[in-house]
Length: 410
Image (cartoon, rainbow, N blue to C red; front, top):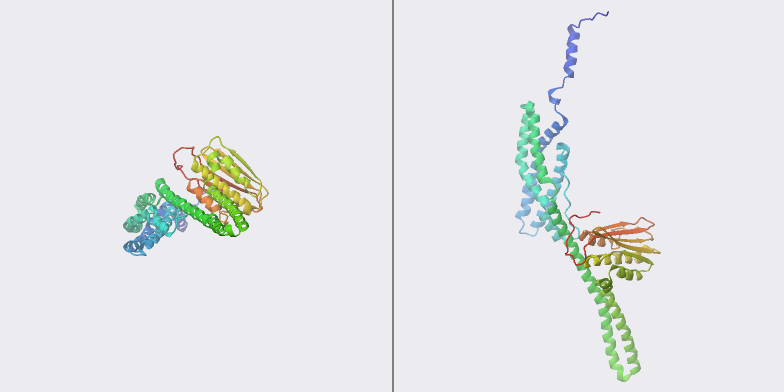
């Protein structure tokens, strides 16, 4: 049997010190989440001060100068800056309070028809204005939470976790209420305003194209025709043979002018599309393409006139790109219905490399389809083949126009 040796004196004191070191010290007994909440409450003061000063100086200055030329642009820029402050605050809330708040949709500045429309959207931005309210409310709250937390660190240590949790929960609720993205109604309003700008721009571009085609084509040809007939009239008695030649030449000019007017009318809305539908209209377009095109249309009924027109012009422009840019030897067009969507697909075996920003008009097509809740996807690796897929919302012929409930994202 082994006898135990009693621990006395300095050895006993050393054992007691070791046991004491193993006990959790009061300052580090809080969990990591509590320390993050404390850090958040302590940084409330500097962050709320920055936000409040920004609101008072930049936004109030812009609002006060609204009657001047620079007032509204300054206010719009200030609201844009408020969005960035809101983004920083969402990052801080996520890191220290564990609250994940989705980022709001960016302002739809694409296709707005100029800087004035973009500025107006910024001035009406609900996300930025809620951020302004957040910074105004948070300043006195930030002073309060900083003071209470700092005092509790030295005086009310035992109840600090409970105080921190309660105040942090208020911060969580405030952030969720004022820093969250706009609700669906606000999103749809912004999207509708953006889409309206795209449609207006597209319509204006079409009117300019029609005016240019009339001025440079049929109108110029008719002016020459009138001049030629005037000269023929003068020579009718003096030189009948020359007058007959001029009339013959004028007759050729009339034929060309008529053809140009037909082409222009077809570009506005082809009669074959109205009378016979997509199958015949797309077959007509394919026949004018410089490469052989196989057209397959599998529809058991005709969509609404507007949808049919957009589908026709989309395929028409895509086939023009095939003729001009693809270097293809053949192409195909497929049209079918899938549920409540009208599907289009144009494929060619050309050199590929087509991009939405490549200057071939694809970006304009994508914007036009996006304006009607459509979808436009380009798959064109270098070396080909190129596959362009488009979707449009299906509406039955004669049905009232309406927009789909949710936007499909690319």
